[in-house]
Image (cartoon, rainbow, N blue to C red; front, side, top):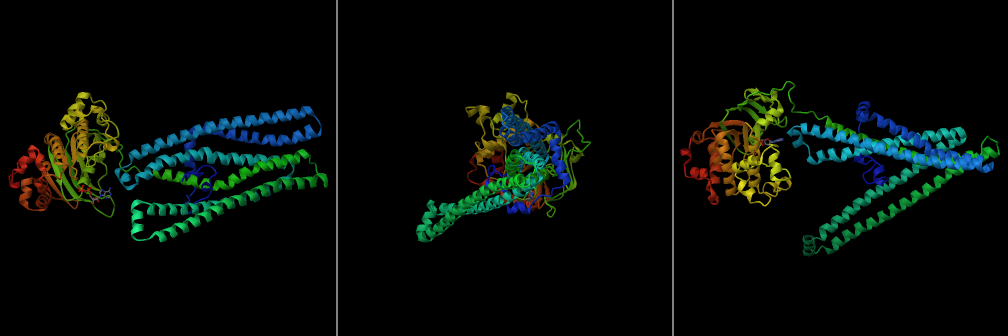
Length: 633
Ligand code: ATP
């Protein structure tokens, strides 16, 4: 919740802390304040101007009240028309200037607040970009977006409302008090005592209203719930069939009755508030008139009528600032909580960092070596255990295994989406942690299970991989990915929009576009995480035809669920429970009669005997025609 209440200025909700806010109040330390201040430092000049404007405009706002004394004493009572006109004009001028300076202050303040949030937002985005995959899987996406949007927007309101209101209220009070004490210390003291007396009941009335509003909100939710449940088609059917009309009616009636009671109390709490308000606002001036009069008439104090009028006017100017300052604690706690939440995000350490002396090799072969790799997402549960294998340049490896065995985890370690805990992953003989991160990721192209396309055209999605790709290059990639026929048929061709997350395309089409995207990227190593979800056989065949030549000609790793893909690889690794339990060719593994044979019997071969596999690729038909033991080497 941002400070000063999102429900609008002065709204009853904004003025009090919720139970949750009370229990999780942030610790305000000098370090926190210093850190907040560091965001203001680049705008020192603007800050100084804002401070200056606040002081001057607060003074100018009070000046007409002080001048009232002069108008009375020197103009009216002495009958000096010149003085009267002079002070009236001066009052008008000062009021105009106060407003003008207020305008300048609000412009500079808004400008400064906007720039500070601009800096913060950029810094946060940069920081979030550096976060590891772990951060994004551990944190709720909604929370991340809230941090980026409403929380940072809240900062703007803290700077332009909370901070400046604290300051202008304090300045107004100080100036008013100095002016009052100059006139008469006894009356000034009365003023200081009377103002908080007025503010406290105001606050109490506000709190009552606030809790009534909360209660009636809950009651309203309950009524809506009953209506939604019982006045829907299926709800009514249930009510009728079980003969619950009377029961539902009395449930509704009692909630409705509670609601009107609350509404009446809420309205009356408002009235009570106004009674208190008007009584206290008139007690103050009357007391000053009375005591002032007493001092003047009985004790012949050196007081004028003008002085007493000034004191009454200044008293009137003190109510608002005192009231705001009494409420400021709520805004202050919320503001500090807001900054603490934002800083907590800034303080999440960057897990995957570029090594200080990161290496960019001049030549790339594209060999991957896992050496005794151990890894876990959470400390208590080891996911990968002693995984070792080598993928030589130009070769391909298929990783197979039951769901959840750790196949995707293995490939996540190659582009350093996560770092290993034990052992090492090497690229061309260099530990990936020592390589330049941008270089490493440039070498690797992943087509993941969940294809992600940005909301835009096919062209824009392709250019994301290679911004300077020519039309010919794009068409060639689309052809290789077996999707050009589809693109060509679209009215807008390459400019066809893919919709949000590519939802306007079928799963198979999306996959093939993402294959084209990877082809444009042209990495040294291709990684395919084959989707487990079933695509229709035509789609599968098209994807197969796109992937197959890539596997045969490029260094590649496949997480495979289909026999056809598995057979295209040079070596098969069987992963079970985070370990490589078998490795070899299809023929060898089937002969061994272990985990692979079981997987083969339960998963891979089943996919091939399904009757709808009419549109089998040539490769699949070929395999289908073979006995497992006779598969091509
Ligand atoms: P599938 O074939 O179903 O895709 P997989 O073999 O690729 O499975 P992984 O995705 O590597 O399996 O997951 C291995 C284990 O790690 C699973 O038990 C999974 O629950 C767990 N896991 C995966 N990602 C995370 C994560 N971000 N945080 C915690 N645990 C995770």
